[in-house]
Length: 72
Image 1 (cartoon, one colour):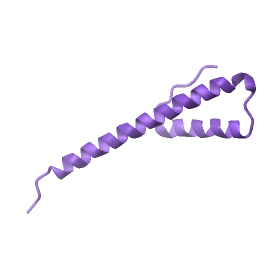
Image 2: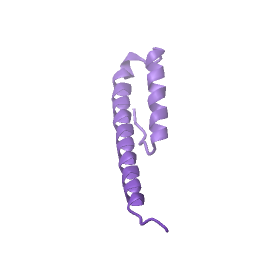
Image 3: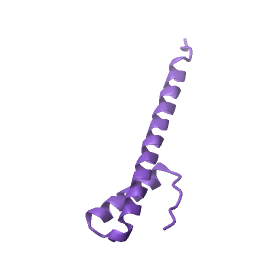
Image 4: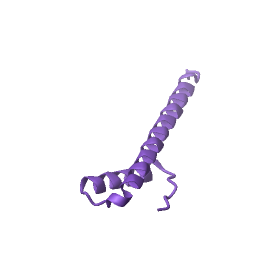
């Protein structure tokens, strides 16, 4: 089973939610369950990294804004 590359947080989260739903509803054949679990693991790591990077970028932007001189 070829897995598509995930480029966005929204796409990764959507795919992850779909996998979770399939597992909960017992829709996944036992023969591909391991593949789906591995994909879910990858998607979780991808989402965490995106969140960490975004948080760091926002902190840096706020830091830059706070260093701007005040207008009088």
